[in-house]
Image (cartoon, rainbow, N blue to C red; front, side, top):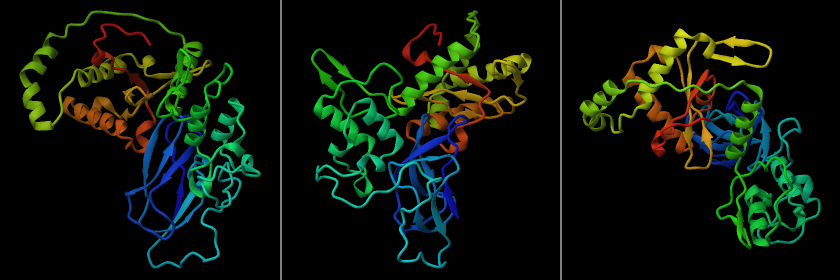
Length: 344
């Protein structure tokens, strides 16, 4: 069975394999963690689609591949073994965006001939924006490949200047900011960078109207007061206002279907299903929006449990690919910060 790059969001076109949990020849169980992938929206763990033996790894760590590209091959236990002369990392140019390099010592620090030809697009872009010579950067990835973290560490250690004005590089934030003089520079990770880009695009392409009304929350406050402690003891988490808001939003969207729609500049697409995206903060490292589907068909307790489950797994990087798609309306909860009113 082929292991392919999953669709981790409706607008995601590619992803970067950041870690393989298994090596060629290892036994694999269905649904156990197989690899980690990072996109412009999320970094998450991907489970094995089937059990068997990991026969081939076609896309190595640090390499970016298109959605649907073959990443690995799992064969049933007892199937013919992979030919001993085969290269586990080999793959066609259509299934990856960077070719594997010859083995070398990742800590040697010796300039490498032709290093630029072995870089992933993310690393190549970062080197170009910081005017870096990749042959001078020691790589710590598999087979000595230069990873984004290697470049970020090199920038920090050398005090390299920030790139010119324009989109920030698609990289993971370094452990510590680069400090020069009286200021610090923090490179944005994929999620934060793309969050900013999408919000900016939204403001320029979709008409925005801000309207505020007062709502009577006394009954909701009373419900949480009288049953909140019992709920927490039984369910293991607090009953917040968010499931009440989600339920109310679904009722409003049912009455006003033009709001449960997608606008592309030429037409309005009305969605029959009401699927709420719930924005989840990743400890100030960006936002992801897991989706609660068919909200009108679910009770308040069901909504509370599902929202809590999605938020918990989002922060742990354990969301499934299909849990990030098909949202028709999004809710962002800023109440945890004591905010009285927010426009975003």
